Structures are given as structure tokens and as C-alpha cells.
Length: 133
Image 1 (cartoon, rainbow, N blue to C red):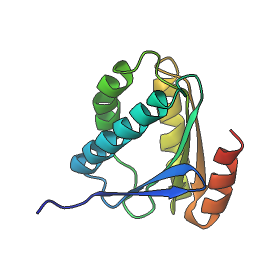
Image 2: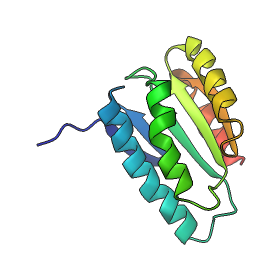
Image 3: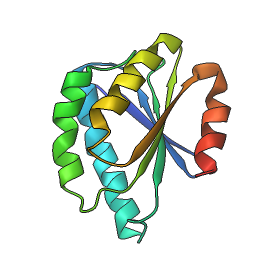
């Protein structure tokens, strides 16, 4: 039996991906689940609508940015165009804001996105922000 690294939850129409580990296997599992959800988003005729979601890294900590950038490129390339993303990162370490800023600068030309960091205690605020999209 394989270990589960990601939990998926749906809250008020928002998909929440909860990382239980920051290993590469966890990011790979997330990408597989993300691609299914993104394909559903497109198949539902929402290609031109933003896809808002939450990445909860409060239990796992942030994952490797280098690996994330490398592993995500084929997913992005598989959609033409890749729908705009609004991502709420939920963490218990607000110093992760530095990593989020780095992600923003590295992906600025790759695809349309908007990222915002929230403390785990403010997950309701993250959901409300995404619902306004």
C-alpha cells in the first residue's frame, strides 16, 4: 500500500490540496490530482475562467521550488491556454512569504497567476479571498 502525501478537500467550491509531506512524491501526487481538476475545469467550459485553489503547507512546510518549477512545466504545457490561477498558500510559517515572492518572480512570464499567503489560523480569509475571484 502506498503512502498518501496529499489530501484533497472541497470548501465552498474551492479545492484545497493539503500537503502531508514536502517530498518529491508529495508534489508528484499533487500534480496528478491538480491535472485532473484542471482538466475538469476546462471540460466544464471554464477555460477562460480563473481556477482558484488552496495549497495548505502548514503540516509539511514548503516544497522544493526547483523541483516544483521543473515538474510543473509539462502540466502547464498540456493546456492551451493554461487557465489563470489564483493560489492561496496556507502555512504556519509566515516567513514562507519569501518563497512565494520567489515563485511569483520565477513564473511571471510562464502563466497568469496570483498568489497570496495566509496563516493557517486565517484559512477562512483565504477561502473568502478566492471566492471573490
